[in-house]
Length: 213
Image 1 (spheres, rainbow, N blue to C red):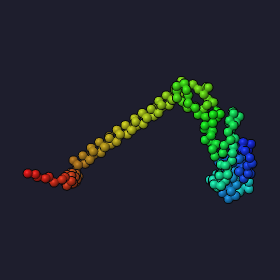
Image 2 (cartoon, one colour):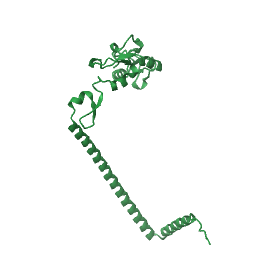
Image 3 (tube, one colour):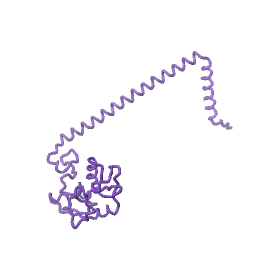
Image 4 (cartoon, rainbow, N blue to C red):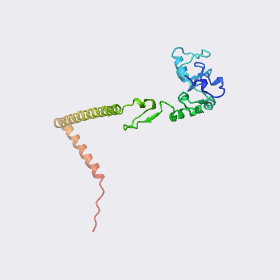
């Protein structure tokens, strides 16, 4: 759904209008071939019902949609729009590309995030401040922390069990190898050769001793 035309100052070119909702384009996307532009929400909802362009009925799918050209985005950004909190008392008129940042700071925005001043430190929408319950909020936060701790404890227990299983498998493998060496002289010889080779490699890494007088 686009921006209401009545919120804009001056004339708005019809090329900047969505033909689905008849409002000024919001997050516009365009069809790949005909390049007709629509609000992202409008065209995606339209395509769930019929996979065609609303203007010329050319076949399209959500994957075919692409961003509108930069020149069109620039034209939209330069439009001047009234704050959507005008009914609450805001008299600001801003460029469309600054609307989002203005709404975050607008003192008349009922959804502006504010901090609780009663001690819990929660950040809540301004219009929920009057019904905010610190005790309930803290209980919810504590419950969430306890749930996270429980999940971590479960993961630690699983890891410990995996380590125990691996340790048991290693011991069984060592016992098997020991039994094989004891039952087969050739394996004992190979094992001895491996140990001797390891000793020789270790000795070769040693630095020659220096004799001082």
